[in-house]
Amino acid sequence: MPETPVPVNNAKKVIAIARQCLDRLEKILGTSLNMFYAEQERFNETYSCPGADSMDPFDCGQLGEAGLPPVTFVAPRLLTRPSNEQSSTRRSSEPSETTALLPNPMFATQSVRNARAATLLPMEQVQQENSVVCKRYQRLIQRTRDPAVKENLRLELQRRLVDNLTMARAKQAEYLRQLKEQEKRTADMAWRKLQGAGECATPEDRERRELFTRILQYEDQHEWPPDLQSLVESHPKGLKAARHLVMHILGDAKHPLSQWLAKERTGLQMKMAQAMDAMGSGVVAKDGSKGEAALCSEVVSVVRTAVLMLGLAFESLRSDEMWDVCYGVLEDHFIWPLWPQLLGILRLQNSQAEQRVAVVMGQLSQKTPKEMHVPPLFWQHHQNVLEETIHMLRTVPRLSPSQKIRVLVYVVRLICMDPASPEGIQDKPLGADDLVPTLSYVLVQSAVPQLYSECLALEQVLDSRYMLGEEGYCLTSILMALKYLESLS
Image (cartoon, rainbow, N blue to C red; front, side):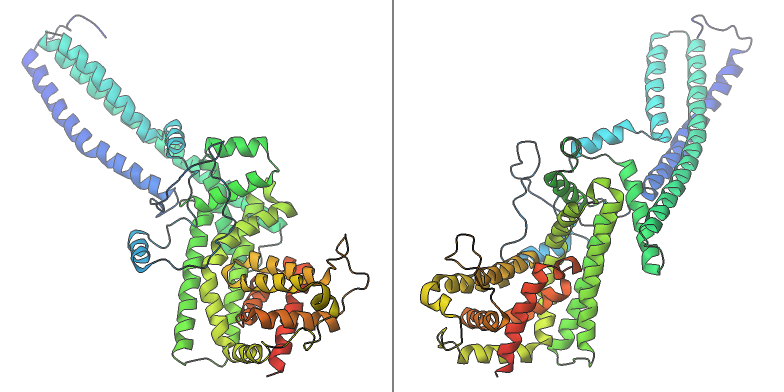
């Protein structure tokens, strides 16, 4: 930049040309640049997760020592409904498809701002550069007294701004091209992974492929909060780290998996509400049991898909222990909100059987253990075992599905184990002839006929991994005792 004015023969002509250039520059900066910035905003909306700018209101409370939320809510303890005021407020303030599946205190806004600032797009960079250039030239123009030099500085400023804008357009086009290539590579990777898992044969599997592709793209473009990052790196195979990771994903309102689960949950709630309205009005279809089974099957399918996506996207979540962690978090925060409606449909479907069980419970409530053929071991020496199992059965309706099955397993174990033995094992195994009468007695004394529908719902909603083990045996034993009571009516 020369510090002396450039000799000009016709100063008036140059000044007129400079004024024309200034007018053109104002038009360019007022229209073209703003138009490109608006185009950039549309680009950001196109290549980010759509419609997820709002997050559920959440009160973080106190975090743990490492800045992580303490994992103290394995599942809601009581089945409570929100008040009308709270529910109406949530419906009016939260769009159903964009809310996170659960509150997410770990998605720190500071880390998001830092990540966004570290990856500026070409049009954002040119905006910052042009702002710096304008300030520098403004200072030079203010210090210069010669009008000709000022005009030269203004012309040079115009050229610099236009050149920067032209270069930014080229970089933006190249960036878009590279982004599309990266999306294609990510989609191919998702296709190969799903093919390796044997999950690409049906339209539902193709939908899974699209979901998995969006998950990979989102994970490539976003960083985890520092606290979560350090926890996962220090304990890559730890159950606590895995649980926090899944909670973080489900709590991120912009994450594709969280959005998909929220959408599926909303759809299932609408279907269940329609089914309950039809049953409540007396319009019960002939294949009502098939419709209820289809809803349960859809719930199981959604949870399995979510666990599959987590295992494919994160290598640390592929073991059997991590599968249990993923399933537990998903059950607590996906199945549990659906449980009241799902159980209501099952109770309406099996209302007559439940009424028969209730009648039998009332008729046998005054019977002694001896009269109901309970083994003498319990009612002669260990009456406290029967009392404890009765108390545990009464808590089942207030628990989450996984806690329900744990209580039922505990009840059967307590009956099959000998309290007098130091190892808790009976000298002679308790056969079905003794187990069913004992279970029938404690079920009668619990006075909870709703257990009939609860057990049927657990049988249909729980994953097959549970049903093939001890949980399945215990659940089948209690169902057998309930059906025995029903047969006595």
